[in-house]
Amino acid sequence: MAGLDKMKSQILNEARASADAKTAKANAEAEDILSTAKAEAEQRRSSISQKSAAEVANYKERVVSSIDLQHRTKILGAKQELIATVLDKAYETVTNLDDKEYFELILKLVGKYALPQEGEIFFGAADLKRMPTGFEQDAQEKAVANGGSLKVSRNGKNIENGFVLVYGGVEENCTLRAIFDAKRDELSDKVHRMLFS
Image (spheres, one colour):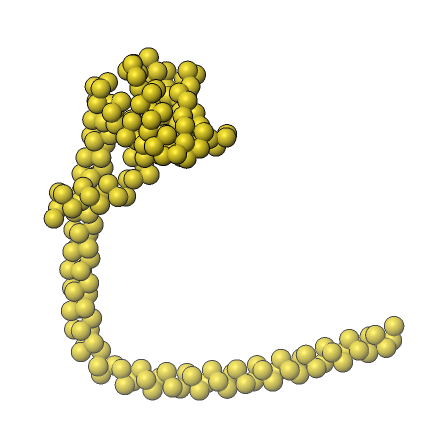
C-alpha cells in the first residue's frame, strides 16, 4: 500500500508541476495577446468611421438582396401553387371522364403496365359495375401484345379508380392517383413550361 501511495503522490506531483508550467505559459501567452490586442485597438480606432460607412452600405445591399430573395420566393410559391392546382384539376378531369373515355384510358394503361407474364387485374367495385362489354377481351389482347396474359378479377379491390395488377403475389399499383403521384415531378415540369415559358 505504501508503494501505491508513493506512486499516487508522484503522479500527482508531476501533474501539478505540468499544470503549473502550462498555467505559466498560458499566462504569458495571454499577456502577449492582451498587449497585441491593445495595439491593434489603437490602430483601429482611427479607421472606425471609414469602416462604419462601408458597413452601412453593405447592410443596405444585404437588405435589398433579402427583399429580392423574398420576392422571388413568393413568386416561386405562387407558381408552385398554380401548378399544383392545374395538376389537381387534371386529375379530377381524368377521374370524371365518361365511361367510354375512361375505359379507353384504362386500356392504354394496361398496354403500358402489363408484364410479359400471367397475371390478374383488379378494379374497384364501382369500375367493375360500369365496365363495358368486351373490356376483358380488350385487356387480354393488350396483355398478350406484351407477351403475357391477364384475367379480370371479379373481386373488387378497395381502390377509387384505375387498377392493380397482380403477378405471383406482387402487386403493381396502377390507380390513377398512384400514376399521377409517380409522374408528379415530370407533369409539374410540363405544366411549368406551358404556363411560364
